[in-house]
Length: 264
Image (cartoon, rainbow, N blue to C red; front, side):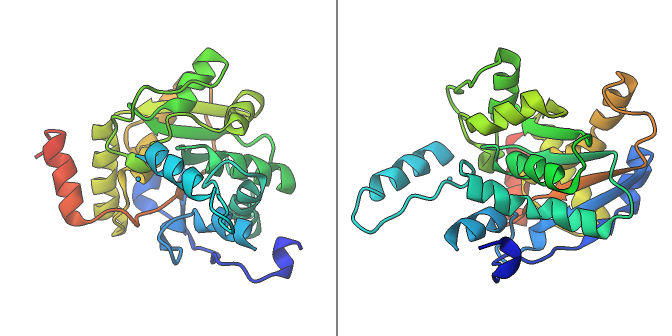
């Protein structure tokens, strides 16, 4: 059954032009607010479609439980149905924007959102739109794989962005990164947490460090550097940042991160 023929668990989230981010980036920046999904995260798109922690430990436990009769293992990022569900975010962008964006910025953990966005770009004919794939140091399994040209398993997840904590990205994420126009970038935990704090001041949304990774592409000057290095066009017209979620963050946790990183 096609996605349009059934009731979805996710909602069509707002696409908001951010004046503060646009000022920093020097071009129009739209933020796709998937942090306001009913679950507080974009992940309901993929998991919800499939159904019609450090992460690896939880995954191992889930695989063990799936051995029970009647139990089914559902990967949060490594399944075509999950990718198809995440592709809906691009369809919403295509319906909301008059022109295709100059770039899409997203965070990468296991790679499910990346795979979904690539699939979505293909569906709407935006295959030439570059993707800025953001990770934090200590959780950069995609970046390590891109550099090696093969899947790489990190020894451990040391980043505070625990929801980016997949030691190995899915194979399709690497394939998409090598075949599509994907720019893999890594920022520090400090930059991710600072982006969380600045976004709270600018847009009044509290998001988690995993989401801060994508916001840091603008706040930390990654976009401007990529333009200077000619990886991105000088005139981008517009940028879309997928604000992927804030279901695992409180002010107390933000302050704890700042203390842990020597920010306060």
